[in-house]
Image 1: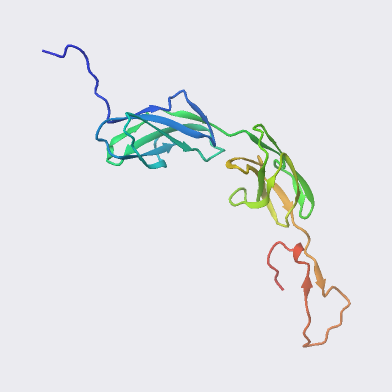
Image 2: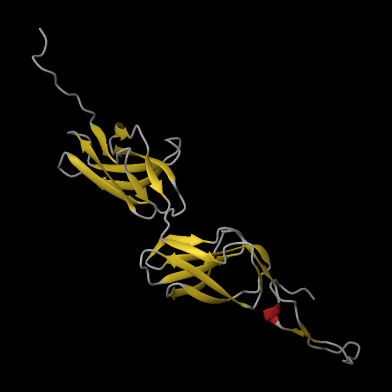
Length: 239
């Protein structure tokens, strides 16, 4: 004899969403749901992957499982420059047997709400000059933080904070670099940002020695002061 009708065997934990047709924008929260069975643990964690499951990043940690069958989660995608596939994995505190991984990828679109117009690569700026930083924003944002990098984005320094849209007159710092970028960030959501498309160059000010500068008469073994204009030097002074 066999069963009069079919029945269903479900996974103890089963991801339901995101769907393969879902698309999210970078900087926005990514949300999903999963179904839980009974006796699957008390907490769960979520991991994301952008390389089809080769490596995983934990994005939700030890959240309490509620009493309902369907559970929901969300996490912030903090990379405004990433565009491409993503999948997620959920696992409870009881281990890998109580886990599920999406068999497909969903899609992340890059953030495009802020667009740096100038400087956008290739410029030659003399240190100490005033140059325009200009950008567009399509989200009605009103306050921005401005930064520059002199090592192609490895580190960033502040230019100004709480700047209104959408231009700023920048006094170019005295640095010596051909790997300079400018970045504009939403003050209220630092993930929302854009930077120069390519590097530009800052030409440092010529060092200025003020004394001795010619015509002085100094006695042997006398103590004399050597002075210079510190603002014209971009690195430590060697005498």
